[in-house]
Length: 579
Image (tube, rainbow, N blue to C red; front, side):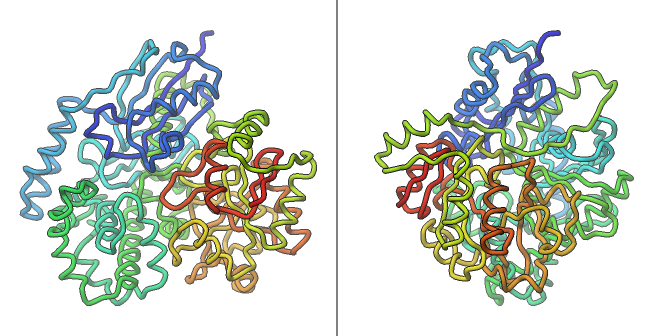
């Protein structure tokens, strides 16, 4: 039997489309994911959207493959001639429901279609090259790595190809059946982008700051104003957001300097509507309305699909407070959020979708991902060479002593940069490219923010031993797969909150990584030793990077961030570096 090597690829070869984001690759060999990563980690350009050549080279090296070994290429985004029909359909809907001129939307998508120049990477000779719809790739990324062979699938973001903002599907025995799509011009993703822009943050990058700010406000004060902006059409699996549709073009082009004056002029309607309220109350009301309309959508989706287990992907589900609300719905038995829920996860969805479309259906078995350590690892020789090249003093530690040394320093109040094993796939640091610190010190968030250049009001997340999670996280159960990947918040047990002030947000929640020994034995050993010293079975776990930079990938990246003040100590492989 010949190997099947599927390359899933999301990225743009033309210069004009590099403003899009989250290019990446996924390699599936005989049905197993052997490598997946985003281009930004290697180019060091946040959310890089250019053709992922560096990620591909790294992924092939991880898998021990050559470009010529790739048998199939699965691209994200279908741009066929009949796509124009869908673009006209949704643009016409925007026109008739808002009175807005659809021509500028059509011009934007026409340019994208004409600029479609994606070819298999050089050196590859695939037998099959296929192009898959954006939201179908999101759906596949949620379904195939998830825990249930029978599931409702929901994808929601700003807008994918065909001007679609979301999709509802049913997953059953390895097949994905699309049930409906919704109009991207009215999407909750675009609503949240406008909210982000209005509050002075960068849309497409800083939506998480709005979620953090929302906990400081009163949603009731501006909620009525939010109802005027975004509505859900119950029973229709679609949204109605007239003002968002009118401003869609300005906001999605807002990153370009020459468009900023046009964009700011376009937000005047929102300034008039929201001007009476504080930023905190606007964020709180926007978050509440975002949760309400999507929860209504999910209820209808579950009823339509007839499956109470739910798997989700798309940028809207980067919102961890929303995911908690969905998890608490009585209509839903369980929720799985793809760990790389934004467009960075599309390449994995494309690869998995293509594999399952072409593999024999007999004997299909769901293969949940046990972890997402799918990026590169580095040998001790490579790490030592990087340390010498970086000009830092270091000491070598016996492997048996690494966990104990890290735990002892953490218990004494030190901030530890932690670099071990394969890099995580997705936007969360999950213990291999992390900064660790004690959660019992109320001053620790200030120290971390000062070192990393981050925003003061944003919460820090904990990593907690799974054997203790039930006593600290209200409602947590061992089958909550989403909690392993920092994709959902929980209310912290009120009796425990005073013990860990550094990871409890002002609303009493935290976004945990619940860690099993099987998933990451070394980090589990660190936290176990720390628990023995302090009685607290968790630590702050934040991403190892300076503000506005991608999470570190290589030893050189880690050493550079450490030299710039990211931590007191760096534990990297079998080596320790003090500042």
